[in-house]
Image (cartoon, rainbow, N blue to C red; front, side, top):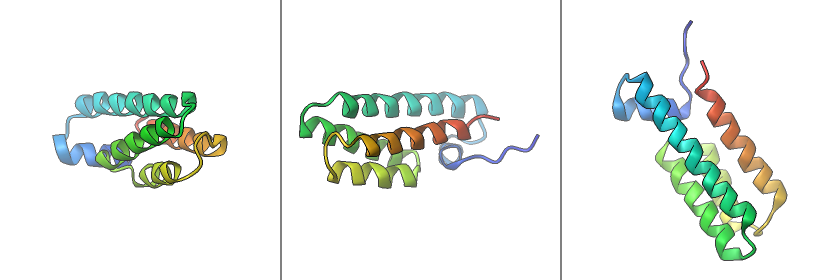
Length: 103
């Protein structure tokens, strides 16, 4: 079966070479970190907590080459804290990126 790597896999492959096991491990680490940032945003009662989570998510996305997620996270950081619709968009974006790794 041919496998067309997603944005994250392409970035990881450029960094670590053709090591599917390592790429899979790094993908899991990416998703876990992204979910942690999303949880921080979701549980934040203060603007600073929301922005910190969004900024962390933006940096994480940038590190992994997830350009669309990075742009969404930047928008969230500049937007209204506690924006449920934005949080839903971010969660869907992370879920899509997680799904790119499925073969």
